[in-house]
Amino acid sequence: MMGPGTVLGGRYRLLREVGTGGMGQVFLAEDAFLHRQVAVKVLRGDLARNPDFVERFRREATAAAKLSHPNVVAIYDVGEEDGASYLVMEYVEGETLQAHLSRSGPVGPEQTAYIGAQVAAALEHAHARGVIHRDIKPANILLTRDGTAKVTDFGIARAVSDATVVNTGGLLGSAYYLSPEQARGGYTDEKSDLYSLGVVLYEMVTGQVPFSGDTMVAVAMKHLRERAPDPRELNREVPESLQEVIHRALQKDPGRRCASAAVMRQDLEGLYDRQDRRRRERRRRLRHGLWWSAYLLGALVVLAGGAWAFNAWLNVPVVRVPAVQGKGVAQAEAALRQAGLSYRIAGSRYSSRVGQGKVADQQPAAGDQVKRGRTVNLTLSKGVQLVQVPDLRRVLIQEAEVQIAAAELNLGTEVYHYDSQVPANYVISQSPAAGQRVGTGSNVNLVVSKGNKPGLITLPTFSGMSLAAAESTLEDLGLSQGQVSYQSDPSPQGTVLGQNPAPNSQVPAGSSVDLVVSRGGGIPGPANLQSLTVQVPAGFPANTQVLVQVDDQRGMTTVYTGTGQPGQPIRITFQWFGTKGTAFVLLNGQMQSPITLPAG
Image 1 (cartoon, helix red, strand yellow):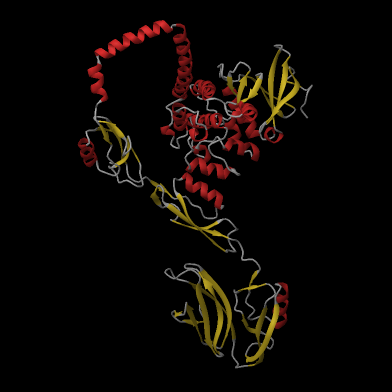
Image 2: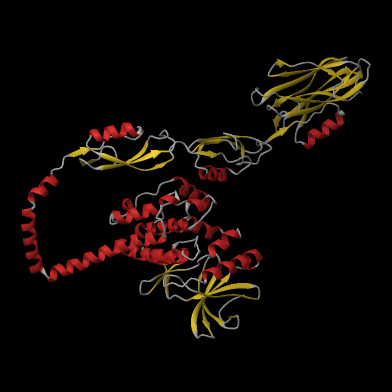
C-alpha cells in the first residue's frame, strides 16, 4: 500500500497525498538525488495490473516527456515499484482550474482569454511534436500562484482509452469535454483538443458546460446533435469576439474549427491584448489631456476639410438583402444585382434541404440592411451526402441512438414489441435496413424488444402423450387440467389426441387446458409419426395465422394452429392414421397446395 514515507525507485520519498483522480493517487514527494520537490502519480491497482495498459502508459509518457514548455507540466521519470507503476512530474504549487471554478465560480472574459491562450500555447507546442492530449478539461489544467496555466497528463488519455478501462465517474467527467468525433469513437487529432478547449472556455465564462446529462450516452448524444447555447445568453458580459472564438471551437465539423492551436492562441491573445491596450490608452489620455484636446481640434479641422467625402460615404443608400437561399446562382446573381449588391462564392457544403448547385447559405442574411455595393457571400449546396445505415439489430437502444447520431442520421419511430428471442431494450429490427445508403438527416425507425410477455406461458404439443404425462407437464408449467373428453380412435387408450388452447398459444399462468383423449376402439390402421415444415411466403404480413389440418382414416383433424413470420420455417410433428392421408395448410384462411402424406 503506497503512502507517506514510501520510497520509489530508491530516490522519490512520498511526503503527503495532494489529490486523487480516475487514474490513481497524486503525492507530493522529495527527489533525494536532485533535492527538489516533485509530484508522483501512482496508478490505480487495476490499471497497474494490466500489462497492455502499462506498456501503452510508458510509451505515451515517454513521448510526453519530450515536451518542454512553460505551460506544460514537465514529466521527469516513469517507473515501477512492487508491481505499481508511477509517473514523476513537475510539482506545481496552486490549484486546478476545476477547483478554482468550484470555489470562485465563473471568471471574467479577459482572464478566460488569458488562461485559454496559455492552454492553446501548450497545445501548439505538443501538436508540433506529434503529441495530442485527448483529455483537455479543467481538472487537467493547473493554475500557479502567479496566474500561469500549466497543462498536465499529456498523451496519457490515449493509453487509458486504448486500454478500455471502465471508471464511471472519471469517464462521465471527461464526457462533458469530449469532441463529437471522440464521442462517436472515431478518429481524433489536434482539432479534438481545440473542441475540448472550447468547452473549457465556455465553462469559464458561464459557470456551466454547454452539454450535460445523467449518463455518458446522454452527454455524447448532445455533443453529436445539439448546438451549444450562446455564452452571452448566460453572461451578458461576454464580448462578441470571445463568443465567436468559443463558437468556432465548438463546431461539430473539425474542418470548421480553428486551423490550429496557434491560430486559436493568437485569437485569444488578441482579446486580452485589446483590453490591455484600452486601459493603457485611457491612462495615456488622462496624462495628456491638453495634448489630446489639441489633437481633437486638429482632427476636426481635417474632418471639416474632408466633410464632403465623409458625408458622401455616410449617405450611401441602404438596401435590404434579398433572400437567395435555395435559388440557382444565376437567379441569385440577378436578385442581388437588382438590389445593388455584388456576390462571391465562398464555398460549398452538403445539404439535405437544398438541391445541388443552389445556394445553401448566404451572409449577410436575407432581410439584413446593408450599404449598396456590399458583397454577399454565397455557399453552394453539394446536394445530399449519402451515408451507410449502421447495423443496429440486437444492439442496446441507447447505443443504437449514439450510432444513429454518429452516422449523421435521425432517430425516427421507436415501436416496442414483446419478443422471447431478443432481450428487453435491444433492437429487434430496423428500417432502412443495415448497409443501405441514405441521405444524411434521414430517419431510422426501430422495433425494440420488451422482452418476454410477462406472466405468459407458451403451450407445448400434448398430442401423442399419455394422459398421465400431459397432466405432469401441465403441473410443471404452472397450469391446470381442464375438461377431459374421450373419443374412439386407433391410438392406444389414454393417448392425448388434441387440446384447447392449441399448441404454441400463450396463456397466463394458472390457466386450464382442455384435453381430448383416446378411448381406443377406433378405425384400425397403422399410426404414422410425421414431420412437416411450413413456411409463410414473402408478401404475407407479420404474425400470419397458420392452421394445419390432416385428412386420414379418422377424418379431418387439426394438428397445428399458431402464427408465423414471412420466411420463418415452422417445424411441426404429428400422428396420422391409415395408409393414405392429405395435409392442408391455411394461411390467414387462404388454402395452400395440399400435401400428400407421407411427405419428406
